[in-house]
Length: 114
Image (cartoon, rainbow, N blue to C red; front, side, top):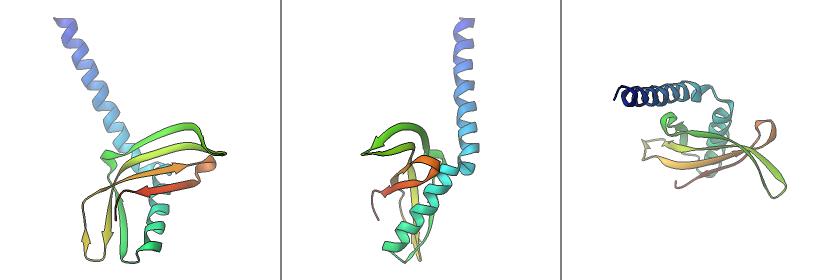
């Protein structure tokens, strides 16, 4: 019984530590920053009334990748939810995908709805 409690406690502590670390590091992640700034510019090109893009840090998943789209290497994939702020409102969150290539260059940002 003691071993079971120890295992449950250890797993819980590890999950809590990982979650706290991930949340604490996400805003300073250069991949996240690049996706946010590039995504905001792309959205504003299509809809000038968009004023900001707020990424939901708790929903973010930043994954290293070693794949290609055609001949273009993809090194990082960022998935999560983002709130798109327009002049008078901020709606429900949209899901987004961001692909980054070599040297952190943003290759694609995709939002589910606008």
